[in-house]
Image (tube, rainbow, N blue to C red):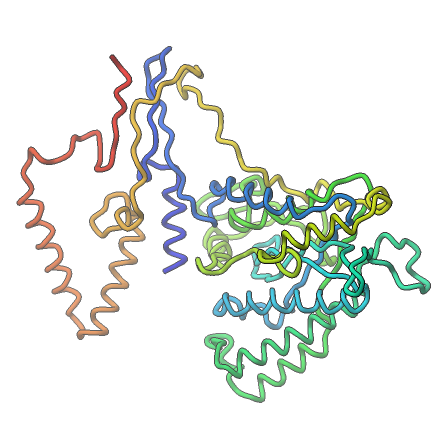
Length: 453
């Protein structure tokens, strides 16, 4: 039902079903209508304000004079289908394992107090299920022992000539990530918190499960560290990079080249280089397959895509930032750079400003608000008898009702129940006096602004 609900909401975004505002042009005297948005976090047209709010909050965590790294943790292919039936559980596994491995490795190798901001990302460029997290991590912090300031430094061995390009040993980090994640996965199965049905049913057997665990433990997992490439850029850029994954679904409009009832063609990076490649090529899917892949990334409401850990957790952030600013010397500030990302890798994540209000007929900006139609509750829009509810959604609801009632009360009960509901609705309509019906040009909850004298 979550997938159907999201699709129904996004299909009504910025349509008359959601209400809006009517403006009258002083020059041509015609109406311009602006309809409300659906506000769903999966909608590519909505939530620019939410992304901007996150970007603003996250930018306050940036301390001048500190290098910031992006660290990415990815689940291996052998468990790539598990999140489809275990979204909440696998998200917790991914966040927990990434943070624990980061914290352990940084504290062991660098001896400073760590903080991290993580964002969940569930797709690749071709919209396949590809669960991983992007983490923003400072390359310095307060010492764990004496409260001084420690900057991440490479070990004094051959191969690490540029000390500035180092956070921790990447091999140690990914092995720690693998160990913690596998242990977490084992606990989920032991506590019967994993759904292993359909294509995963074979893992219900102990022998098959242990074989999969052996595969996981024998292969290298993917976690890579992206260091600061320049000394002249700002740390807010990596925040912008992370912010683009918060809302809007797995693909932006600008990537779509062509679409019709049969096929959808869009730009996608090709290659298997760790971290992705900048070369983009056209990629085509059937329309039904495109929709199926897009739906793979619809998440339940209770799943939070962003988490703050360590010094940046909500209970510690204020104290941690004060400690950082007090410990960071002027010399450290002048020597350290901040993270920037290559321009072709960064999508704009600023809040999309609403297009300039002007008359859609003559282009004039002399508009006056004349009517405002309030956005009704979704429960009202999606009622069985609502004309605004998408037809396919109503039909789907009816089929669900038939399955439920026939299963609970016996086959054929749903037909009687449908007749009962229809009779009740028609009876209620007959009892409604004509003079009490709302005006034809306004629905319940509509306000007309008296702007004309």
